[in-house]
Amino acid sequence: MNVTVENLRKRYGPAVALDGMSFAVEPGQVTGFVGPNGAGKSTTMRVILGLDHADSGTALVGGRPYRSLSRPLCQVGSLLDAGALQPGRTARNHLLWLAHSQGLPAGRVDTVLEQAGLATAARRRAGGFSLGMRQRLGIAAAMLGDPPVLMLDEPFNGMDPEGIIWVRGFLRTLAAEGRAVLLSSHLMGELEDVADHVVVIGRGRVVADTSVATLLADTAGGLVTVRTVDPQAGPALAGAGGGVTAGGAGILAVTGLPAEVVVTLLNRGGVRFSEVATRRTTLEEAYLELTRDEVEYRAEELR
Image (cartoon, rainbow, N blue to C red; front, side, top):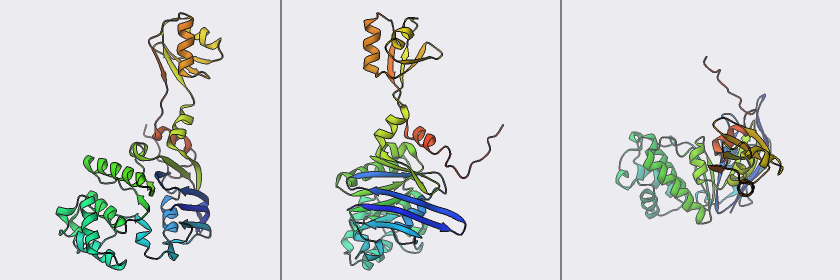
């Protein structure tokens, strides 16, 4: 089962929240959903879940609007707000109430509490939970119906290191089971470790929709660095069609030639060098490059 968003448009008065948003979340992978504050991530997720109406366009789960799904928790599990719970209820009672609404057995509640690491806190009132524990409870609630689609908004927030490692592994496991996972987060380092695909948005529209590997490779631009003090290195590479720029500390930046070709050329010409490396970019660098002109709220730099 997948999620398809097609040409969503949404205004709040004069403000454009969604401006032709289109993308898909496919089964068997984690799709990262990223963008600056105010880009439209939360609005898009709310429209998918039927919590908000688009002015035009469609958002479908398995080819159907969320509102038409029978037993929706068994089709889509979601975590949009870890604070959306009744603080006087225990963790187990919170989940029992949700399970009862979908005709799910009490045994399923105990299963997801165990999965989320909350078995020992099951009878504690949720209002006394830390943010990280509320996130775990929210993920447990999302998993109640064992759904094929998961949508999680900022699940890493408030997590300690152990919790972050658990979420990473849990999401990978869900994707490996063939589920479609949509994951919104501002923590690019965590997304880079877990996401297979990424949808980058800005000002209500899609800026990039590609695999993480492709995005990183495109951002790096095929740049190869060479560490050498041999003055023949530059001419040897430029003569083979490479673009060569000298940097400090004996570093040459080379474009237009793969690293293995650079090594072959240098060895063939008897050029001395100590290192050849393909530049590796990060998801954070790629994201900042893509959204440079899409940021709506920008603070002034201190001087």
